[in-house]
Amino acid sequence: MNAFHQFDCSRVDMSATPRPPERKSLPPFEALRAFDAVARLGGIRKAAAWLSRDHAVVSRHLRSIESWLGVQLVARTPGGIVLTEQGRIYHASISQALEDIAHATLDVLNSGQHNSLSIWCTPGFALHWLSQHFAAFEARNAGIDFELRPTDASPDFAAHEADLDIRFDATYEDVATPAPGQQQGIIAQVPIIAVASSRYLDARDSIVDPADLLSHELLHESGTNNWVQWLRSYDVACESRIGGPRLWQGHLTVDAARHGRGIALANSLIIRDDLESGALIDIGAGKDNFPTRMGHYVLIARRDRWDERLVRTFRRWLRETIAKELPEFAPKRG
Image: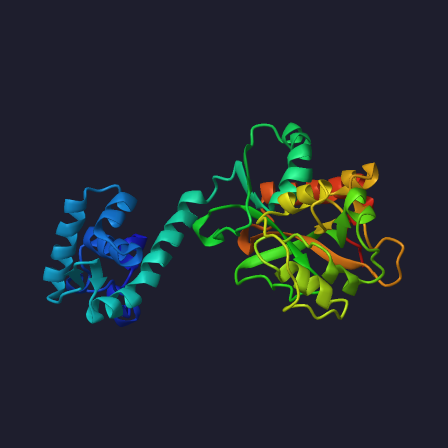
């Protein structure tokens, strides 16, 4: 008797076997997807553009799922489509499940297909260091499909928007802990300093301690928070007294400082050449009242990809290159 005939089906506990949901409890998936898009984007035409469908098709899907459920999910008003109360409740229940399906599908589609490396990076590090050195990494790893995206935003790792992310944290602020499912490591430790041109400093009152900066033109990115937090670390309270233009990007504040418009906050790595040439001056250099304030460049990835070949190779190259070319910024061991 072969193995098949020896198997006793009567001994299998079928009640312990998970069964799929009843078909009558699962609506048509395309109609469900259309409803989700309309709910998220707030309109049929926006949903149609997102789904690459004609808006009439999306409208038909909406009517289909409402008919299938026997309830009204959306209301058509002069201002456009809005969810009914039942529509809001239903969407709140299904939206996370649809995201989970999308992420699980992307995980499968991307498994074993990692001959590409997509890196999101804080713009200053991307412009002033990484873009200048990556040719060496490419030469050592021929055939890699490489993408570098300078951005102030962080990627959605669950949606595979990027393989790696490089961010900058000031150690005197609340340093973010890794999000669930992520892993990170420090790749560089750099001083955060106040800088200005000699032309600006020669025409203004001298700066003896951090509080003196409040009477100067301070250059900001998207808001005043960077300066507020840096000055707070020196016990200078300034929320109601701080002013100056907002330029939105760190490289713009540094460029404005080069041209004598005011004082910028920057880290020593991205303005190393300016400090060496004298285009910018570290205002606190050699002053006891300006003890060093540090920041960290942090490399972040999904935990389940942290030790994959390409991610591991890039991490090792980055660590070795910084240690060789920027030893003063290399993370301390031990």
